[in-house]
Image 1: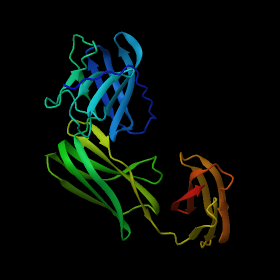
Image 2: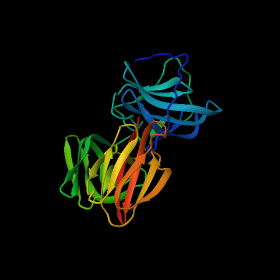
Image 3: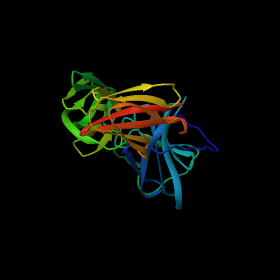
Image 4: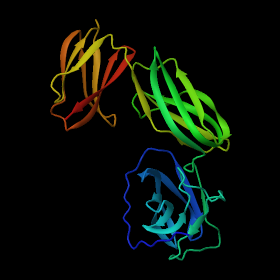
Length: 297
């Protein structure tokens, strides 16, 4: 068994919107501590939560892969207490007898109950690709899995802003598979402008996980043209519509920064006074909505 000892290990991670969790209990843990997906470390998902460990409240609990040892680690306040030698795409649950969790030699952490690791973050499906491509006035979605365990279905979700999501269809999973499985779905009614897509994968037992987000632009900009004039946040816009077109500028979080109404003709959008970054331009002509990305260097 590989062993190691870390005197101090600072582990600070930004939080993410991924709805993947791992429940940890047993040994020296009081109750159940839920770890949330927070980021990727060494190319693998990392999880973090807080709870009571060794009778101490507010202990930060982390799960992540370390290299070059290629070990999954469960640590308490930066000190590894348990390890798993299986370098899998996601951490293994304690129900997986082929990938056991063992206590780190230098630590002393035992209790009346055995260590239990389970949850939606222990993914039953290994997704190796997910792409979206325009196809006439539709969007073709394609994804490939390398392995599947207990996979019931995929729900295809779409968003206009990458924040609010709606289902647009379902595809049955393969259940159990150890070979490549190819999936396709055709979204026949995409929104005008940029469309964001993700997959919600669900097990037969109700566990779930989300894929990465992909996007594709469906151009139907018959009522306007947009041109970056100088690269410093100044854009020339020509409105071809007869009626007024509403223009909204938002930051990347969706907060509205500006609203104007442009009639037909030439106009200018100027974000040169804004801080450097990416902004969203929402152009609404009646029920037709387009989203453009604006860049202030």
